[in-house]
Length: 488
Image (cartoon, rainbow, N blue to C red; front, side):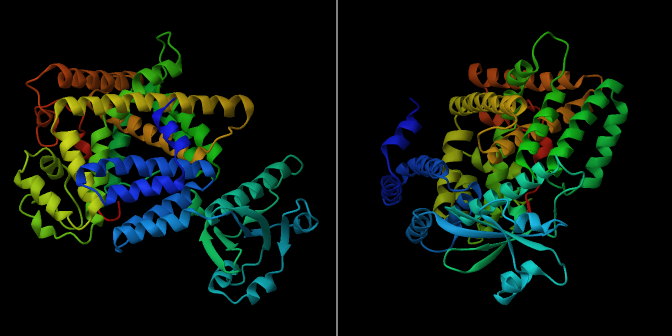
C-alpha cells in the first residue's frame, strides 16, 4: 500500500496537526517534514468533503502577518467544523417561474424579491441590483463550506436547464449576472461571484500583440495539413475555456490534446501521448518551480530588497528576473548570492525553508536533480493514465464520478506546455510536423537526462542556458525568462 495512504489511514486530523506543531517547534532540519504533513492533511480534508476552493481559501491564512502558531490555530478551527445548512440564491430570467414555484424539487423554491430586499444588507442590495428584474431561485442544502454549497446548487440549477432542453427549443432560464447570494445557518448573508468557482485557465501575455503576430506568421509558413491540425486543436481549446461546465471543459481539453498527437506510425494516440507528453512537461518542470518562487518572493512584502539588489541588478521589488534567481539557487555553499536571498526571506519562515530546499536539493547536486526530474516524469505519466480513464468514463458512460476541477487544471497545464513548446520548435523548423516537433522536444529532453546521469563533468550550472547560451535548451526555456510581476 502507498505510504501516504497508510499514513492517512493511521492518523486523524488532530494527530496530523500535532505533528505539524511539533515540527514548527523543532530544529530546522525537521522542517522538511512539514510539506509532507500539510499535503497529507489537505488530501484528507478533500476526501472528507471540503471544497477545493475552500481549502485554497483557508490555507491562505498562512500568508497572514500573525505569528505562525496563531495562524496554525486559526487554520485548525476553520477545518474542524460540522456541515451546516445553507440557502443559495440565483437571480435568473425565465418565462416559466411557475415551474420553480410549483416544486420541481423539494429543496428548490422561488423567493420573494421584496423579502430579500428587506434584509437591507449590502450583500442582498448588490445581489438584486438596480431595476434588473428577474426571478430569485433558491436551493437549501447542507455543506462543509459555502463554496461547496454554491458548487452543488449551481450544478443542480444547471441540471434543470439541461433536462428542460429535451422538451423545449429555448433555454429554461438565463442568468441575470454572475453573483450568488448565500445565507449561512447563523442567518447572515454573503455575496459571491460565481466565477470564483471557475478558475481562469488562460492567461494574457504582457506582450500579446507581438506574440500573436508571431503566431500568425508561423501559421503562414507551415504545411497546410499541420496548420489545420494546430487550428483544430486550438478550436477545441477555445471551446474548453469558454464553457461554464467542468465536464465540457475536460473533454474539450482532451480533444485539443489528442489533436496534437496524430501520426501514421501504427501506434495508438494514447501510446504517443504517454511516451512523449510526460517528457515534454518535465522539460518545463524546473522553470515552473522558479516562476512560482519568483511570484512568492515578490509577494514577500516584509523583505528588504536592498539586501539582494547588488546580486539582482535586473530585478526590482516588483519583479524578479528568473536568470538571476537561478544564479542564486545554484550558488556555492555560503556563497554571497544564496546568503543574500536567504536573508531577504528571513521574515517568512516557510519561504526561507522553501528557498533553502531548492538550493540544497534541486540546483546544486546533479544526481539529486536527475532523480527529481525522473520522478516528475513518472508522476506525470501516472496522472495522464488517470486522465485517460476519466476521459473514457465521460465518453462511454456520459459522466465521471470524480472531481473534475483539479483534473481539468492538470490537463490544461499539460496542454499549454505542449502547445507552446511545440510552436517554439516549429519556429526553428517549419518543415516539421506537429508530432515531429513534440518528438524533437522529447529526444532533447532524453539527451539532457543522459548527460545529467552519465557525464560527471556536467554540473547543474552547465544545464542552465538562461545565462549559458552554449548549453542544451531543454531543461530551461529561454523564452520563459520573463519578469514576474505582482499581477502575474
